[in-house]
Amino acid sequence: MMGLIGWSVAVPTLIGAALGLWLDAHYPASFSWTLTMLIIGLFIGCLNAWHWVVKEHKEMQEEQEDYNE
Image (cartoon, rainbow, N blue to C red; front, side, top):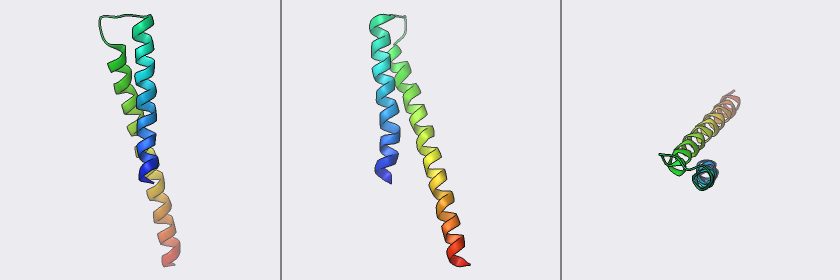
């Protein structure tokens, strides 16, 4: 499960960085698109991992409650 959480953070972060590099090459700006998209990708990845952990925690709690009954 920890590997899945790692990938759920890494993939959006890498996609964000790649998109940022493309934007920097095609639409130069006074700021770094790469850094901006990297941070956005990391944020989305962290939200994704948090959602995954909450979902798994709920399932574990339900299984524990079923086991105790």
